[in-house]
Image (cartoon, rainbow, N blue to C red; front, side, top):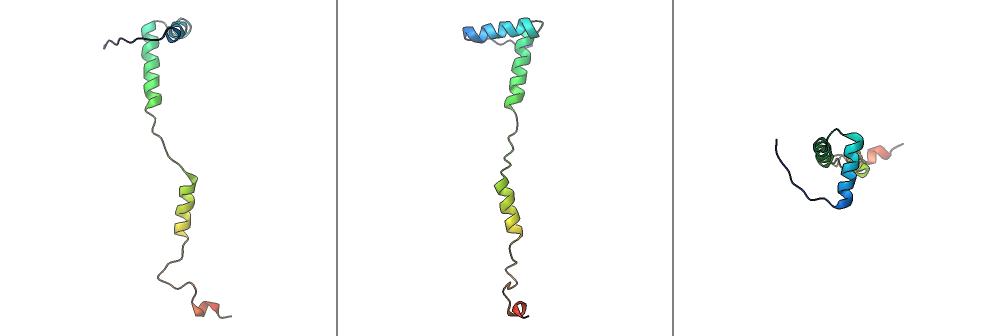
Length: 78
């Protein structure tokens, strides 16, 4: 197992001690699980689902085919 040394602010260390006492068996377990969950949260893939992109894609698909003349005189006859 690897060893890690870090310096924490006093208030952060006090919070770690309180979490250790309330939620974990040992301080090592607390640090390991908190770091692992932080890494998992940081590694989240961001999905950019902008609804405007879907609207533009739909608009492009609904455009007239430029090979045909949408304003043909034959279409205007009653």
